[in-house]
Image 1 (tube, rainbow, N blue to C red):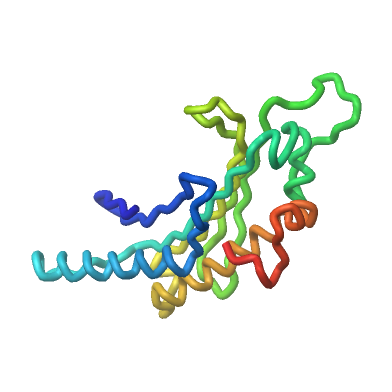
Image 2: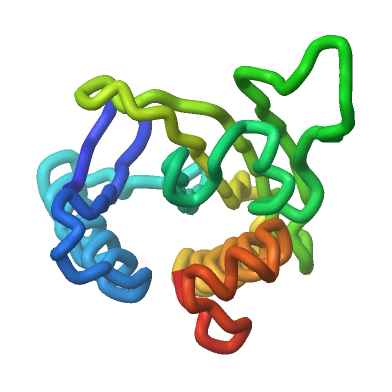
Length: 184
């Protein structure tokens, strides 16, 4: 799905049916570039002014389901390497919700990688879930001479590597991921 807003253009994809084939990054990237080029041509032919992006962003979202990927909130430390709750006997017991936010520099001055891990609820089913979001962001003046295609490839690699770094070996095994096969 392509979404236009006053100051941005999104290409979104999500699997609605578990039986649907998982669309890999190259297909989403190629479709975004194709539609952006068409939109750029339209704007240029209509206004005689080219679109000048001011920022690039690539976001990956992974939803974990309670009861499937983790049993309880306090167990999230078994999903994420650096995240969790000390499960020793405590006055407060286990938390009902737990979240985290991180920000990392991307190599070669290509921006930053923001990571958020938050509890969410499916409004239709009431199911408790946990959302892991990794967003590579770079203002155009930071990117320098890198083209959009070069930047998005570098950002994608950092998201994949970041995802693997943040999640546990136990989950990699469960998801059938190995480092050289992990293509989000």
